[in-house]
Image 1 (cartoon, rainbow, N blue to C red):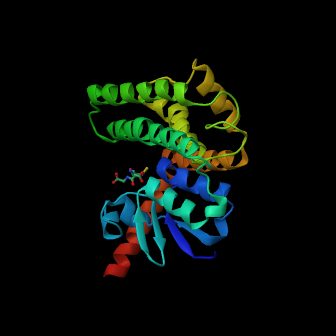
Image 2: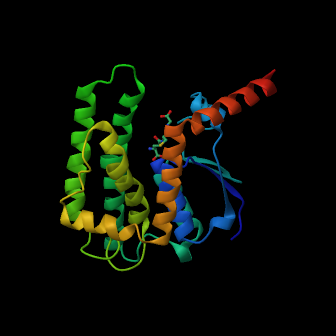
Image 3: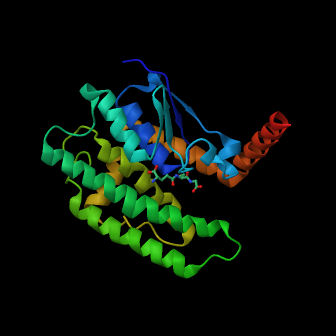
Length: 238
Ligand SMILES: N[C@@H](CCC(=O)N[C@@H](CS)C(=O)NCC(=O)O)C(=O)O
């Protein structure tokens, strides 16, 4: 299978990082290119590309696919011999539960809470409501994670690892920026898993990309690139 697909994706976007890790782990990177339409993304005009207006978005020769979990399923189905979804119905159910914990209970809540860092007067009640939900998600993760090995057990990566690496990155490096300590600390299985999975080459690659994105956001490089992209877009629109 050789299809030229474009993944609209950002370094720091956890939902994008999840899909990139899957592509790296399935060893199908040559079939994809990775881009971010900076001017559209940062001016809230990504809806011109896809109605949901959020990354990741996968552009295939059949059309556009939004939503990281739907893209992940699509990629798994494109390369069934390399699928990262387990081999029995119960394994697949377990992997999907871990993916949902990562997405819905961790990433969604932390990502929404982060929005308060961009407003002039952050609302502490909103931050507390959302981070409490993330903490509850981590407690559930502790129960669902496998003891040792990868997230769903064994030594092989699954989509659960691809979703959990960016989610746990946010717990580790993002939540503290909101004044909340990493909730994973002290949870035996989750803390051990996070230490272990960072040694995996695909996880390490994603973490390095997210670090690069965080650095660019904090040191002003990202803002400068966005400004240049906006100026270039304004020139072509004239
Ligand atoms: N449920 C979506 C969430 C995607 C999402 O929120 N992406 C963020 C970047 S991490 C985004 O594009 N935000 C732009 C916005 O909120 O306007 C998915 O799983 O793909």
